[in-house]
Image (cartoon, rainbow, N blue to C red; front, side):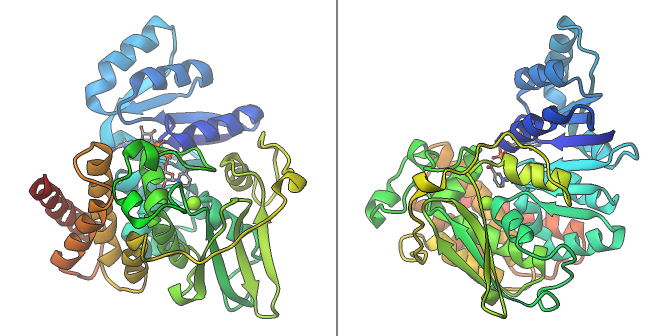
Length: 390
Ligand code: NAD
Ligand code: MG
């Protein structure tokens, strides 16, 4: 039996992970499920899956305990950020699914890596914020880091099993695909005034609100470019972003002999989750067979940086050293929150991120504290900038 902690169990990735894991109750035991504030949903999950621990922010401990007691559920409740770390590093835990959204996921994910766990990485923001430190910690602790982001999981699947490095495997470039999001065919003016509801209405994937907005602005593809560079130790100039509206190919790897390998399948996150759980073997995920005839055609186009300028900011960050990506990520989180709250327009998200990148000084990231310091400064600047726009 392998013991699993699911960080962000109540989210879109968390629920998909539980769906896969519950098909193999004889192989996996749930050690801990965590949530930020949604204690009712966490109660339901505890009743259904009976984890040993449930972790939630301090303010929701009492109502969670009450509901669990009323339902005679024996799951023990732990509180706050320190508990997120405890259930990620405990010696009993074998696998950590890192599926908290945003910078909040960095610390527990990083600690799980340092503890040498098998870490299934959905929280791409960890790598964007602290890529070098994160990859060094993984190498030092011999943590097994497996990508859950569908594109990175696809690339990983298209690399040889004994993959050591891009050059040793004879890889020429990576093709990072993206659907183009809900505004792929919208004009610049239409995009500028899009509502949160329109931005979250993704054509192919059902995801949490933050990544849905990032997908609509194409910031998500930029974060994924940075993520790919760290995960696979490759220069950004060797990663091409390709818009592929059908989301059937989840990314490709081109080799020096001209071969291009693609991973295909229905757009359902249970495939990369099951792949990473079972790796290097395979397990059932519940995902339906790909109807290749109904798919009929595969289209590809370059991304339009003019209509999606957030992507340009992220590409520039991928080519920069130091803390630029950390600043980008923090400002973007503030901008997305403000947009979802109705405080700024879709177009103003770009202004928030560009202004923060212009104003916060770049610096070397030597440790986790320096990452958190830059994140804090950028966040404060972005919050004040948003206030100035209202
Ligand atoms: P979501 O919003 O659906 O869920 C987020 C989870 O994190 C919830 O369980 C929430 O309770 C928890 N959380 C939020 N803030 C927290 C905080 N401050 N402290 C502790 N817990 C907190 O998000 P999601 O769509 O599942 O995405 C999770 C991560 O996976 C993101 O980093 C995202 O980029 C990545 N990802 C998601 C998808 C997808 O299909 N949803 C695909 C690829 C990558
Ligand atoms: Mg992705």
